[in-house]
Length: 279
Ligand code: ATR
Image (spheres, rainbow, N blue to C red):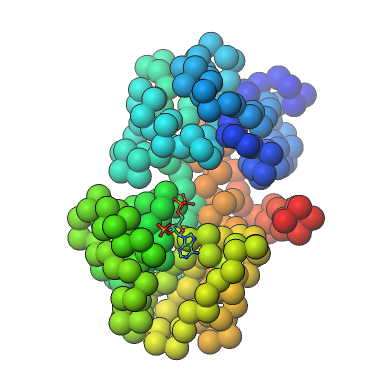
């Protein structure tokens, strides 16, 4: 049954770490949809050809992961507004007009915040740690949801400045500027790899944050990063990175298989078990 129907994929290099097959495979079974979702490791030299030939490959579309998200944005014929603003594509689908693409990371972040911290977007000010590819999606999400005071803090200040220049109205600073921003931050979001398993996190002093601040991390291994643990100990509301991973998968599944899937506790537990097993 699983073989008939639409076929989708995730491609990356390497791709073995991707949890997307587990997420989409779960939804295909739960929703009893005949279709498939497979992981494809594509050598960097072959990525352009892979994408260009997608129309004749029998796939309805798929996910693009590292290191191809930026290249995909350049290569596809119809990147949407979010993809162009973020400069990266993680979801593609085929239409009569050609290959279309978007970036669902921002929707994943917003939906995860909606679920775990409803009303979060009543805030006006946010501090973002990091200025890499992930930070671009978060800045875009914050702007889309109406936040107006966005500070990007990064170790390499030139990267923060570059990101701020791409999103007028946002401001850039180095780590030394963080302590003066915290007392006014309604949201603090970590987009750096600091806190990831095996990557030590320098302890941030969260004392200056207002008591109503929400602290989010996009890292999900471990689920509770040192930043989130410090925030919890201070009594602040926290949002872990797993919700973003799960919710970013929703729009793609709907495009390829025609049904909008739900992020449930059961799905979350399956991924948590897998993370605990494989790390
Ligand atoms: P991604 O696409 O996942 O965002 P990236 O583009 O490599 O990955 O960005 C990683 C982010 O983590 C950057 O903001 C990086 O800071 P620099 O721009 O200064 O490199 C940040 N980062 C990684 N390791 C860090 C560390 N040890 N201390 C501070 N920031 C770090």
